[in-house]
Image 1 (cartoon, rainbow, N blue to C red):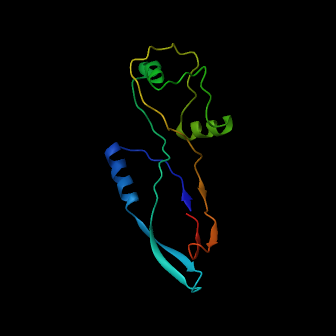
Image 2 (image 1 turned 45 degrees about the horizontal axis):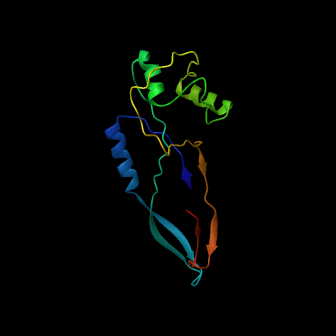
Image 3 (image 1 turned 60 degrees about the vertical axis):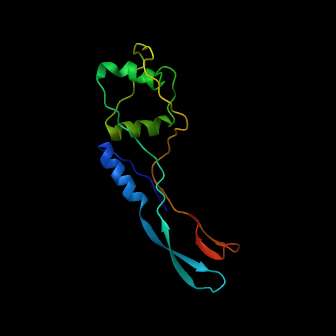
Length: 140
């Protein structure tokens, strides 16, 4: 099972929450294919970052922040289709970034390789018999 959720809060409190989430173990039922009996082992919850951040700064710094993050409202396309983007904006009380902002000089540099976004929701893992492992189990 996968649960997607957002976090918001003071960074050190968020970090403690993440640390606690990463330390949880759960009983995991599996069927031993040799004995045909159910076995229970423990598996650690896998916390995989899917995050939505709120960055707070003075309103007049918007062009600087956009330049720092290499965001050009005239050029950048949202990663979501327009309907999803509108739903996210509405749920956050946000509005689209104005396209007519003055272009700012880049004053700060961020390294942002390897960043991606994903839809939020749940999905079940399939169950399968894996003879080479000797179990029928949820495929985490």
